[in-house]
Length: 332
Length: 276
Ligand SMILES: Nc1ncnc2c1ncn2[C@@H]1O[C@H](COP(=O)(O)OP(=O)(O)O)[C@@H](O)[C@H]1O
Ligand SMILES: [Mg+2]
Image 1 (spheres, chains in turn green, purple):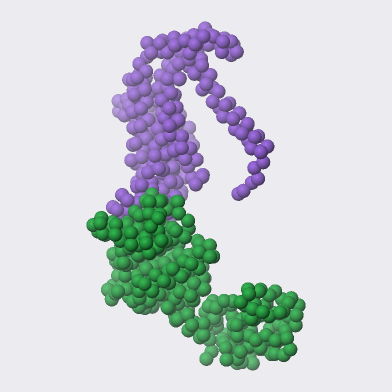
Image 2 (image 1 turned 45 degrees about the vertical axis):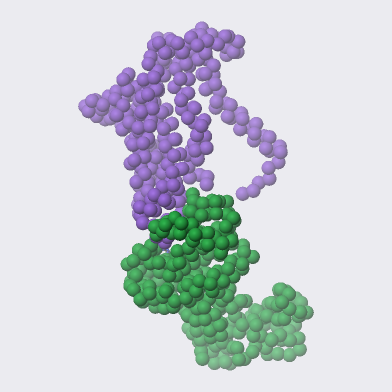
């Protein structure tokens, strides 16, 4: 079981309120991603759940029991840190075995569990090495190994992939998702990268300045962002926003349209513009088009033959248009 | 920062480094050479000194005139004793400052270090009087306490720098892994702190071994360490270069040997905090 419920949880550092009262329910077996810009309080929230920080107010319940005052070691949670936080003086084997040793399991059982975890994570050949002799990806695996051996109620990940290079990041992302399918244990995953959030999450929690902006499945957030912040944060490339007269035509302070919801044509369309930089990715082409409403990002097919300086017409897909009021809230 | 290292530049730096190294080492080398000469040869012009025969005469005289092993033992007791004593006090202090810093921690550290900037003579009279009244003059325990107090700021500062390099996340990881405070201390913190403690110990043993102000002021014979032993040969009655050199060589030999075998730790200690 790994059900975690936050009730009015607040955190202040001195006079600064980093987390205003938050209510959140994380169900057993869910893969929840906290996403938001750097400094918005994701790590703090995770550390509150872990017990590494004391709450300034509110309650944290784990599996229905009040765990607000419980020591981190007694919460049954395992954490993977951004810096990996491996014990540098211990071999890989001892690192992975450490939580089991702390739990005072018999040596034979520890050995069996470490071997099993090492096998799952492709670490069997490295068990006698020290963390300093491993690559970034291998260290990350050791950190995960140390977390999985003792079958925790839930896993907490704090930006675990941000120190890896792009290719490795994609691989590890898949491995962690795969691990979630195998273990079916609750996972809370913190990242500032919305692509990680979209690809891995069952449920995304979008945070800004410590506040929850929206909670929902990746597609819910993509389709029906509750406000302009979420609309701009989720989706890549970012949604285009247009204010002023064009927005007023739709009875809104601002309208938003995603790059993939704009049709591009050389002959006719709603907005006239000039092609600026175009990024050819093979499968897609991203065009930066200057229009009377500002610079708009457009996603076109992989084979479009448009170049810098070409005149084009853009037409938004009206069904996919998002409307926002002056405060940034989405209009129905 | 990557800088192009041309062969020329490398040669230049190598020559420069060797020159400085030899210049610094030369007095020691000369002392050792003179210690194997007769008193008469030792005051000859430098070039002729090299042509004169080697002899152990000075060492015999020094051994006859003073009890080298007593002074050697005093040096060992005083330098090791004061360093261990300082560590016992400094480890908890540095620990607290590194892991649970308060708003005034930095100021406190600066203040401690600033006491090292005052000339020691400034407190000579009060300490001398205290020692006299407490009957600590010419006692090893007295010197252990004084040297411990003198080096304490440096010991705390060094340990603080080392402890601060231990990432807090590792301790948090241990807590998440179910470690109690005791487990954390035994399995995680201590092993990670030992190299830093060892470097500090080594450097301070050397500092205390070479300390010559307090040892000269507060001891005469019974508790006198090797520094006092050397000083005994720089008497005003005349110049005894060869004997002085022999005494110096005997005094620095143990610490030189210790330093040689612990070079790596020592360099770490001397550059503490500066290089990672
Ligand atoms: N120990 C602390 N003391 C004071 N302020 C802190 C502390 N930890 C974090 N903060 C502040 O809380 C805010 C959120 O930090 P954090 O949770 O690390 O953000 P994120 O992980 O989303 O980048 C930041 O403004 C940060 O400066
Ligand atoms: Mg963070």
